[in-house]
Length: 195
Image 1 (spheres, one colour):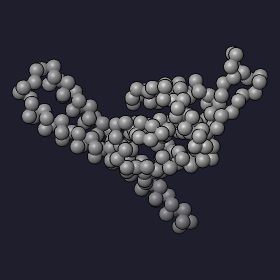
Image 2 (cartoon, helix red, strand yellow):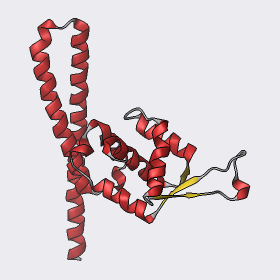
Image 3 (cartoon, one colour):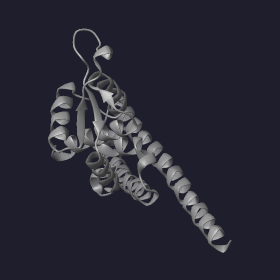
């Protein structure tokens, strides 16, 4: 479960099981929907991940009642344990560089509703900073190579630049919303203590 890929899958599995217990097929479908939006998901990595989470005590397997057996085989249901909830909370508080990289930002964003406001803001600001660095690199490369590129390659570069600019604008809006909500929350707390 080491490395950013394992951490992303671990977060996705724990976050999905936090919502509801699932059997393997349901979990696979949910992860494919969730992870598929952000990157390719290898089904061959799910069951080793589940085995690691079981060994670590973060999830448990439950056999359904005999009258709920589907087909010839019973479907094992995976459920989050108290330790798994703690591990999910730990993963959701991480706001360092790995949280805003391409590999994990989308998954972290998918579970923002379970993430504290301060951590969300740090991740959003970190992601924006990373993309602004990327924009500078794009612009520099485009300026240097513009006259040597054919029109199709130039359009591809322009498309990449516009995509990153669009994401930066989106992040700016999210950051503004998060900050405004923090001000409202603080104001509500002040009003409650004054009463």
